[in-house]
Length: 136
Image (cartoon, rainbow, N blue to C red; front, top):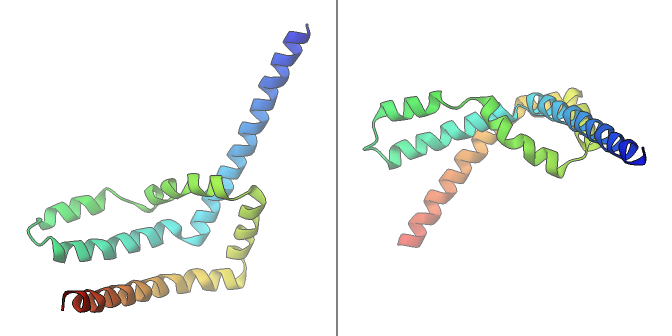
């Protein structure tokens, strides 16, 4: 009897843990959507692909087009999700969701696309200048 109660308790505990994990996962998905992480990842990837195209000019345009079709924001979010599950508590996630729902969070989201593009361009320019110095 004690053994049965112990097994039942363990089973119920595992269901409770899974339900909590599921709730946290759903909150992380909401956070990633609110923060635009998937869309930003696509923008960064597009910029990187443009750099690769110029570096690998022998690669046919069809390759780049097919490669790009295969990736969407949810792919990037699915890669990010386990990282958030590992490093953030559910309370952390709740606070970040509250931030992205706030007026400053919404402003941050709308400004990020332009900001990251400019930062990427500046980084590319800095890399070009420094590589010329290194090879001179």
